[in-house]
Length: 74
Image 1: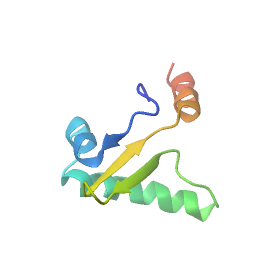
Image 2: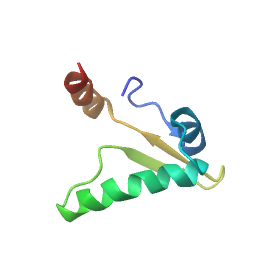
Image 3: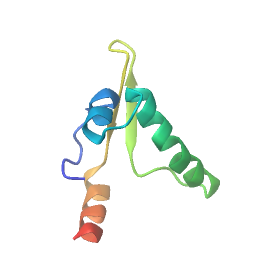
Image 4: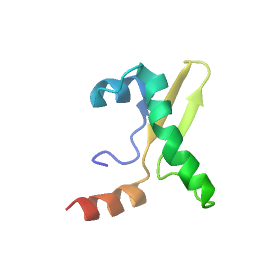
């Protein structure tokens, strides 16, 4: 939320947040919220892209979403 729009690799995100199993662990952590969002016809507040040439997935939060979470946090 502190760096909206900045794309972070799953590996780096896992390392920063101490999520076991690296990038696969990040995908696993986001799987349940994604399912709950889908159940009510919504998408998760995060965005992601897979770059096949790097074999990496990147995640980020759009500035508008980050702003809302920052307001709630404060």
